[in-house]
Length: 349
Image 1 (cartoon, rainbow, N blue to C red):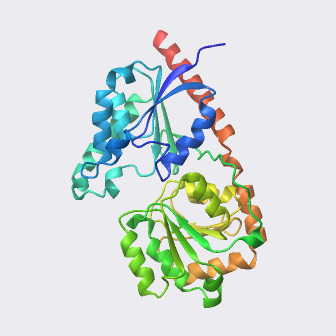
Image 2 (tube, one colour):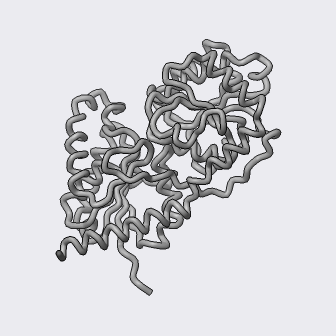
Image 3 (spheres, one colour):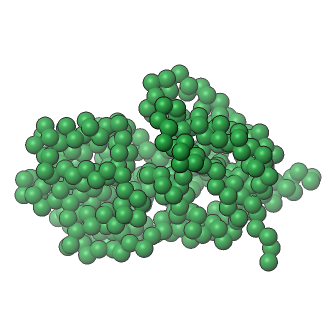
């Protein structure tokens, strides 16, 4: 049997514990990617993840520099972080970079000094483009990158549409997610609908306190339920019991939460940002709105889906087919191996 290539996988925080897009993405990819490569993960150890005063991105740079020799001894590096790819560019190891979300992470930095460091990530992006032999984008397509569809793999059963109740938002509780507009839209629903369908909000972030206050001020404290952080499988299970996933982001790549909702037959109501319109067909498996939507219009959309729920649910399940993890992983592995072979031949020539 041919020996598997030793592959270093770089991501800032552990894919086993992180909540949000990259963690579930890497976990789902890992299941089948191990069939093709000998994987070695480089992420912040637990004691460094608990550090709050220093950005994890900066800590990760120091962590990789400390482990630079070990990193250099691998056959291939697959990086999910710009800072990881920047450090990896100083090795002679072939590099594959996968872009997640925003072009410049400092655009949404929770640290006040982040705005002064945007040029650092702009420079890193230039290095990544020049040093990577393969570039991928999760979400909106970028020039010079291949499309990487979110891999979905879980054992959660699709629930009977009639047994589902409530709506759910899942993601970081940050300003860019525009969760207040979801709460305002929910408030526009008729009282009898809200009585039967609570709004569940899964996730944590800097807006958590403000969102709780908003729900209280709108007399919705008993109907808006904050679930906090949940592990990925538990979140999918909870989502499968809801009627709809509600999103209102001002900008996105392509949220894992949407792919996961579709995979359990849950329709999606969202803003038409990033790559979402490519997979959520408005009027088929959900509804899409402009970023500046009116809460009243959003609420009417929710009601229209409830009126034809069985069809929307069936279509949501159909729309999830492109996310099958086995097929997504197979294609990725074949492209990487082919790219390595081509790069090797060009060096010989």
